[in-house]
Length: 450
Ligand SMILES: Nc1ncnc2c1ncn2[C@@H]1O[C@H](COP(=O)(O)OP(=O)(O)OP(=O)(O)O)[C@@H](O)[C@H]1O
Image (cartoon, rainbow, N blue to C red):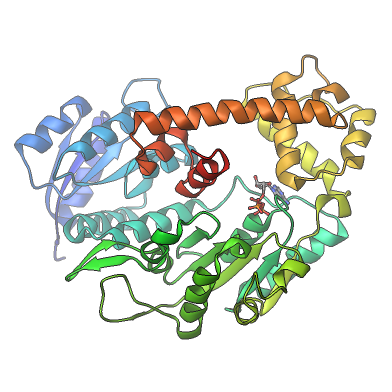
């Protein structure tokens, strides 16, 4: 068998694992080296440059399964100017660690015990990424890696007639390529339903890319959407190109300015993008899902929203009812969030006495499922006994709710402002430190006028 191009370094403190991986990879790649002392990895990479990819185990200290050693090593390896691509090895089921490694900059992961052919294919891609190193390739490889994990943490909860209708429609249209328009108040689950449609579509192994149109600054819209090129080199990949082959989710489309609406309309009509600085248009192949919280009155007001754009987007319309119109979902959602936050915050799973259940079910939930989820997280942290009490939720006391959200707002504003100062306004660094997406950081900067 002809060997593939590529120089690979295997790093694992377990000699058995190293031997097995090295034995196999040596038959497939032109050069394979291995070490069982992870602490010397950087020295090896400095003194023997030219490695294309590192296959890195994530847990080095005996008895430690947190992966902290591996995550720290990823940072250090990627700091070097000619850093190789990193593929990490995680234990079966350790989805969180794989996600963290990808967020740190690993390009893919393999699960131990691995399938040899899949390992070879993964390492070939890692080598190719190091050698081509275009942002688009790296992005797409990561999205594919993440999509292998699926979306286990985000089940769609609800059994009311209204919600079942939504899910049935979403499932029915998922396989088609029709444009879909999702309508509903804030927090009803539009993003979740859009992801479910993508997951069930034939594009599920391709990227799902969100553009939050409410947060793109006007002067950056072109490069953010279409990318920029300088000469023959791509200097920034646009979001539309990043989604190519997959699904583009145009979130908060009702907040797009009229000039931005026109740009989107032109793109939707011809299916092509011309990056800033380019002299030729590039064809795209995408499924479009758009969402808005605007009501019909605003949406059909042509001073606010272009009618021609609306007709382009709403081939299929999915309306998600507010939670107060599908109260039967509330007990199921409560049960789900109580368990989820108990695990997250290391708390007991508290029971819900019937008076509390009734109060939660009859509350109107103006912020819908998101507000219900936040209320339960707060109650999980505040509750003292083995059962929740009504006072843990402060439902009908508008003042109490207002006061606590004001306090939370203060804390959030201070944290964002401090991080902006620390990173001298570098959005990517601030978003990373605060664990936010760039879009949610922009939203907060706007909200707090920072
Ligand atoms: N049916 C559901 N089952 C489980 N979780 C849900 C459901 N609906 C919404 N959620 C959760 O509620 C939160 C808000 O949902 P999502 O972001 O999808 O709403 P949205 O309508 O897109 O909100 P916005 O308009 O503010 O962007 C998320 O954390 C989501 O996981």
